[in-house]
Image (tube, rainbow, N blue to C red; front, top):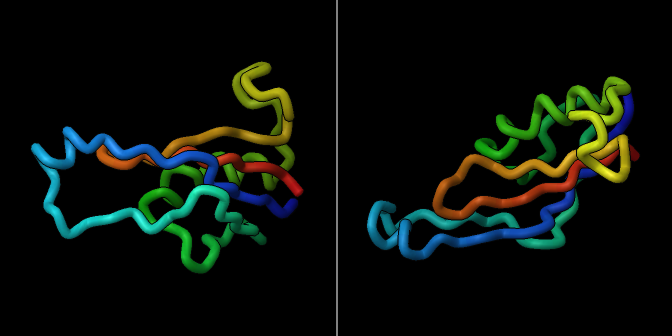
Length: 98
């Protein structure tokens, strides 16, 4: 099984949606540029539980040798760009085999 690196590439905040619908006590603690290494498909320490649920299938596939997900979607065939499902503060992650 290959190791993977997950990089936090971009965070977005939909303030209008937060003001209208979100409890004010929540804040995403992921930081742009933050890097996590994944060994044996185990969630890295400090990684968001919710984001991990979304990213795990991609990490699993890439760590087990999958390439060219979605037929040419990524320039690097051993990578994927995936966003978490947080509708208020979506975070985009780059997953790469290392």
